[in-house]
Structure formats: structure tokens, C-alpha cells
Image (cartoon, rainbow, N blue to C red):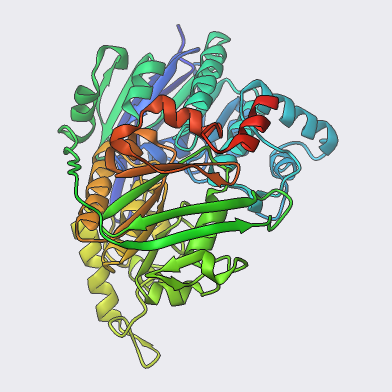
Length: 510
């Protein structure tokens, strides 16, 4: 059979790195083909070449047997190539429908498009409201927009970069059904993911990359997670050790927290109570868009509309206190959006230190101490094994996983008393994920109170001491991780827990 896509000896060099070094890749029609590699292995660069975002320095690309040179994403879409990026390309001030219309012909009718979006989202189990503005969406909801946008084009080749990182297990299963259906109809799928179990369950072929080169091609269904890890990183990921420790006093407390919607599409928070103790990790599970954003905004100080006494830091009422005030007293925060909130894309890694390190060590009498911030940046790069070209590398030059390691390292180095983390290992390879989880556990062991919001249930069970679930703006009672199981947490994620009858009734009615 003539391959749908064939890459031969593709190379791409940048001033300080060879991103792709003689890469060969063959994808057959109707094949679900995984591309596996650690952060910085060259996967994203290769996908950008296929999609026309960047051009290779050398090599050959064949599309349905014909040599092509794809000069832009528009040219790729004309050929029948669609792509869902790990980092989204959406305009915050436009609605979902308006964003999707930007890639369509100028005479597209928005009302008809809105109906198609709703129909496609429903068909594939991707909950989406076409009339919502993007700035009101969570990261998970933004990803749904990108997936629906790609599916509307009925592509011959669909490239998915970490498509399930913020989807629920049920939505993942629905997406897999969709992808298998697309493949049965002849659509080829290039699937980039760090979730080895997903690759083994979904894909029928796998190309493994390391350091910009192809290190092997295999059938992932015949591999184990351990063997795939060895192909990808040259070793099995380090073990994450969670030992039971008695927690200390409550450092961060939430008392009867309720918050009205900030905009029509926000989630209202209702009567939330919980504590985070020194020396423990409290995991917060839940489906994206159930109030996680709103809760983090209140805890971090970005939203100060609540009563002062609803949020306590060391028994001090801080609900009306600013982010800067809370940071000065030991609170640290890792948001789920890396570029734009976690880091300023155009600034160097050294200058990005200033987003959270603003004491006398880095700024004195109004002057930035360049030597100090460069040393801090270099320390993070070395300790967290961040693949970057020094402390002067721009934040947007790093792969998603390496930028995540840098942002978490920046907060860890502050030695905070409270750390709020959202989606800590989203889009991060297995080795880096193990390192990040180990660092969070080490911080806990030093007495820090850590709150982790994640849609990775396996991750929460691995590192959390206690779990709560957020559903439709309400938070469940806490339960020790050792006493919980996936079925119970899945049930709570639907709002079905004791004492939450109104939400249970709503779910049953729906």
C-alpha cells in the first residue's frame, strides 16, 4: 500500500540544537501511529514540519505517494492534515465559534457553524458551549475546542499532541472510540502522548525518538510500560516513594466558601470547607470546568470577592488579601497555563524568576540583581534537569514538559509554607513526571502544605495523603487515599456523595 505519509531523512537545526536528525516516519492509511519520546526529543518539531508550521532543513516528505512541500498550516489543511496542539492557539476575547471560524472560508455562516460545533462535540462526547468566550474556559475545555476544530475538517491525517491530558477517563474512552472509528474510515492518526498505557491500548504502531533521532519502531501492543520506557528514556522511570507521615497543624483552611459567578459561564462555588495541613498533600480530583479555576483564583489571591474569614493562612483571615501579600507570607502557586501565566513567553528563564522571587535576594532598591537571578535559573536548570540553552533561553523555546519542570522548580526553590499546584505533570514524559512527583513529596516531607489539583487520578493516588473531589462548584468530604478507590472517586466526580443530595438529584435528573 502507498503510505498516507512518509518522511525520509528529515532534519531541522536551530542555532543551539539539532531538533530532528535524519528522521524517517511512515504512516499508513487508517493507522493509529504513536510518536513516543521524552520532553525535548524532537516530537513537536517533527509535527510542526508535517503541519507546515516550520520547514525542514533537509529531507523529503511524501503525501499519498507524491512529494510535497507544506509551506503553512493552511496548505496542510488543504491537503487534509489536521492538528491539535498541546499549547492552544485560541483568541481569548472571541467565542468558541468565532475561533473555529478563523480557519474556515470567509463566507462561513456563524449560526450554521455553531450548530455543527455543537453536533460534533455531542457526537464525540466533548462537552462544549459554542457561544462561550475562550477566556472563560478551563485548559481542558480549550483542548476540547481544538479537538472539535480539527474534527470539523474531516482530515485524512489527524495529529494529536497530548489529547487526553485534561480529559476524564470516560471522555478518554469516548475519544478512543471516535479515533478508532475515524481509523476504520481510512483516516490516519499520529498520536503523541506520554501515557504509555494509552499508547498500548490505542495504537497499532509506534515510532520512538530520543535526542532528535529515531531509536526504534515497534508494535506497542506487544510491549510493556517498562519496555517502552526503556526505549524512550534509556531506562525505567525512577520509583516514586510515598511514605506515610503524620500531618502537622492546618496551614491553609477554607471555611464556608461561596462565590457567585464572575461571568455567565463561570462555575459558582458553594459552601466549601477543607484544610491543608503542614507535611501533607491534599489531592483535588474532578472533571475540568467544575470550579477548579475559581477555587484556585480565590486561594491564590487573584479573586478577592469572598469574605475575609473564608480563607485562612496560619489562622489569619486572608480572603481579601492580594496575591503579593500571600506570596510574601509563604504561599506559592503553579497555574495550569504554563505560557502566559506560569511564564512570560518572550522573557528569558532568568527574567522569569522575577515572577515569584522578588525579595532582597533578587531586587534591591528597585534594581534587578542579574547575577542572583541567573544563579537561581541555573540552579533550577541543573537540579530539575531542564533541557534549555542556558538561563538566557526564552521560555517559549522550551518544550512543554521542560517548561513545566522549570516553573515547578522556581516555586520549590522558594521553600514555601503552602504550595498550590494545578495539573503538575500535564504533557510531561514519564521520567520527568516521576521527578516532579518526587519533588512534591520531598517538599511535603519538609513540612510544606501542598494542594494538588489534577485530572490524573493515578497521580493523585500516588502522591496524595488525602483526597477531595470538586463537582459543580462543591467539594466532597476528604478521605484518606489509602481508604479510597477509583470507583468511589469516579462516583464522587459525578457529585454523588453523602450529604450532597441537591447535586445528586441534579445529576440523576440530567
